[in-house]
Length: 463
Image (cartoon, rainbow, N blue to C red):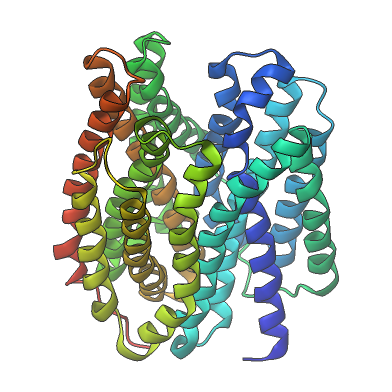
């Protein structure tokens, strides 16, 4: 590959790493925000919920943006929004301003991964795509692994503002490097944006994700079910209307999100596999820290260290798995990956208050290995199944599928966990927590088992 193309990819990788790193830092800061800003736990949770909600609203529009704007325009817009939000969060005088800053941050973050994947597909020749997508796996694995650990250290020594102070210079450096050296990739198509599609997308995907985010609070009796039901119903109707609208507009190439990507069987099967994996993985990975802390009695830093080796392994395996994909295709990776991930989740259904920590560490490493065997070939094979002019829409669909599947998995498994733990009397008692986690992992294992037959039918497209 030309050095100029590699430079573009590395700039985007650094920017995506910073954005994802920031996305995973705030969960540890919630207790500190409650004390410093005098807000409730439900209010503090909105710092992360608003971020996820904004991502769900913006990502479906990135297919259009990547087609109509240049690479530099999208990159500079994304990093400017992210850096501005980070600066505003660092100096925020109160909760309202901090919440607005997180929304601005999320607007920039939502553009980065679709931009990175679309640019890679345009620049990287087919025989090298697997190994390059493996580098994306490093970003997607190491950033979430480092984020909570970094924020935990900063919170032990400084205020929650230090999280944003540390991230800001890295973001500004990436912004300057991109402004100085990033080159445009691909061709732009100029067309008016369909305002109705934007509104339907925002109401639909935003409503669904918001409704799902309220399920956990509902099971704890913290909120009325009415807003959740209204949000899910209106969101589902708006999503249906949005999809219908795109089918109409794509006939004249004016769709906000072109659904012709699903005319490719390879892309459709890959999205089904990714939806099931994300559903099982994000839900399970949310329940696991609760089990480690309240079921096994580990402190929060110790729980983070238990999960760290698996995340590191997942990142390290990305490039070699990509090389295997380039040479031998998908089946040699996807089938054992699906079997391994499902098997580990079935093993998790046997957890109790006596489960040794070394067992969880080993199981988490195996689960991360199974996911590494799955995600890199799925990203690569799905986009490679599309026509070049549809890469941007495919990247937007991948991001949307992950957001919706992740929100659904977290909502369903946290609800099941809470109902079971509460039904046993004391929801914080170790045996109640272990029982709730056991049931949630059972749902995850059943979902993950469904990925095994699908893995046999996904193929690497001809170069």
